[in-house]
Image (tube, rainbow, N blue to C red; front, side, top):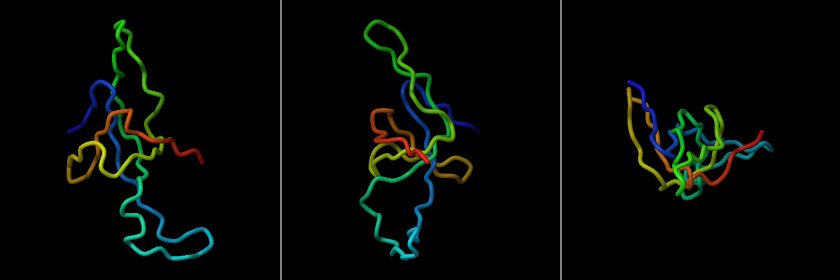
Length: 97
């Protein structure tokens, strides 16, 4: 089974948080509980229609890493994998490497 988001929704999969900083400091498990999380974009909806009926496209592509709030969107489970579906406006930033 596959999921195709509708409108301006984006399907995200959580990326595991680093437990060791670049300088070698180990972080406890509860260090990032209330912070925004990093996700990988799995699928993107076609975009939302504006007031004139034109489709406003989403400036992301599959494989991008983004930051979204922990409590935004809806969590779903498909084939024993956990995903999050969020509206494009709830994606806070794109991670640039």
